[in-house]
Image (cartoon, helix red, strand yellow):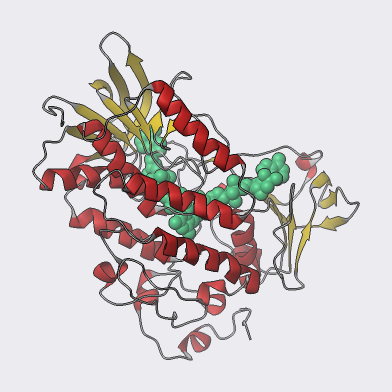
Length: 470
Ligand code: FAD
Ligand code: NA7
């Protein structure tokens, strides 16, 4: 039984892939003739795309707000695009021709924007509006959302029946302390501030951490001609077959000037240190009784079906999980949240919600391998899609693609981006990119979509230091 939506108001925080998914979900219901609530999406940046909206800035943005995006200029997708494709807007539809499986950032940003432009969601977004505070009134059962218009400096507050947080959780760096780090004379930063690998040519670089950021920045550094790349792991090494210039060592014990001592007794002199030590779930606009507090994992506790706040069932979180799947998972979540708000899906009792979460948490705690994690997240998304009319797709095959991706990195960590996969949405097999990733130095959309002669890349960049895969 659908609820009357007239006079209902919903605030969405963030116009990244998650926030746009939410707007698109409501729009899709409206197109089917359903009444939808009044929607307002607040985005603190001047445009949409979230992490994919690259900024050259570090620290603070032009409004003095913390820079949101952690992406760097040379970033290419680190997973095959076939696992993130929207079920209702394919890569074929957007680009009109098959493209490779690992596009650069600008190409994926264009794809995200393409879906947003095809729909009519922009009218709901207030750009350059930062959410400063959210509170809930038990008497009226309404949220008050306080927002600052960053262009005018004006602050205003309004009430909403629902709040949906799509603010992302890879923006506030986790920066541990190491003894003596203050004596390090070279450049030291967190991955959040890393903007491009060109500056590390002929330098010795140390990356602390053993996950996606360390792996990708390390590989970029190698590509751009770093003299040496040292990784430092806390729990487990990544264990790939690295070339001789790249080494994995255990945790840093201390810094002594530019000399770094590791817990196994080894020491190394390095020029640049990048903390690839992950991010914090940090929502400065949320009071403690409403906020989400979790490590970066596949099933943050206190979120029923991964999206409904246990503390307040009128509050939702999108994309709060660690992510094997991204864009289509956010869609699955957004369609579910929409249907809860529209009253098309009924929430069970608080006790039943807790039992449901405990069941998933217990499976989550038993995950042993990366393949288990992949199956877990694909099952989670399939379960969500079963609740709504989001177009279903073959998640078992998506899991196979992800497992193939994991294997491809074990086979060839430096060149896995040259592999191709087949879309479960369209059946289209990716083409090989015109230039192997390891020697492609132009990350632009224009270059990516061009069709140069086989040898052109080598001619254009002749004289520059590139590491050929041959
Ligand atoms: P975000 O993209 O983080 O967007 C959140 C939005 O909320 C932002 O626009 C932000 O400005 C806004 N916002 C935040 N706080 C406020 C506030 N208080 N008021 C108003 N607006 C606010 N995924 C992949 O699929 N493939 C990849 O290759 C890949 N690479 C990645 C590389 C890096 C370095 C990082 C950090 C992430 C990567 N990801 C990748 C994962 C990425 O997080 C998702 O693809 C996706 O961007 C998450 O979407 P989101 O909308 O949930 O969050
Ligand atoms: P992740 O995937 O959360 O990984 C964080 C890494 O940092 C992980 O290897 C941690 O080691 C390590 N870490 C955390 N704290 C410490 C300390 N104190 N000392 C040493 N090492 C530490 O973050 P990423 O930035 O790699 O990836 C996040 C997203 O950005 C992802 O979606 C990518 O696509 C890009 P642990 O294994 O816990 O011991």
